[in-house]
Amino acid sequence: MSEKSLEEQIKTKAQQARKLAQYMSSTEDLVENQILKAQEEGKFNNLPGAGKPLNLQENPYELPEMRMVFKILKDNNFAPHWIELGKDIDADLEKFWQEVDYFCRYTRIIWREKHNDDVITRYNNKKKHFYFESRITLDKISKKIVDYNLHCPSFQLGRTNISVEDEMAKVINTIENSIEQSRPK
Image 1 (cartoon, helix red, strand yellow):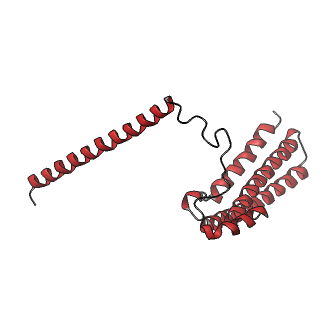
Image 2: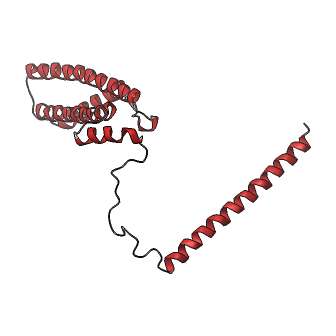
Image 3: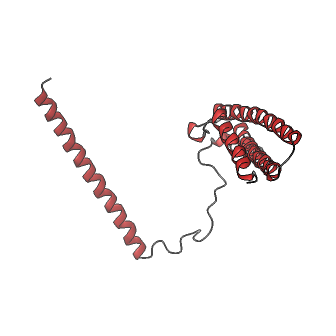
């Protein structure tokens, strides 16, 4: 195939695409003009159901034979496993960051005043234990997210996996900043 014939084919296809685009554009304009004309003539006034809320009870995307099953589940507050798992993940993350905040407040109380070595040693042991427990909690949440993504029916609904190391770095940074801000000067 020569380069000239390839160029001719490309030009021919471009012309055809241009003609199709012009046709589609003119059709869209025609429909839009007809809608505007009907609005001006008042043909959309006093339509049945005007001003009333839409009935969104029926999901047009679910299989008709499954509607009754989904209605029974919905009426009894049941949801698919992946939705319940998503709620668990949200609750776990919220609880985790509340615990981090609580430990930061504890840290500020400890470091607000000078204490003896026993208090500081006890605090450092609690901090190590808190970091250990935080890592375990983040591992569990990470595994739940993986499970959620495996059960989720669509990848668009999936959640971003968390990096336990990155989240631990945030936790450590937050607590160390609390120490620095609370130390008496």
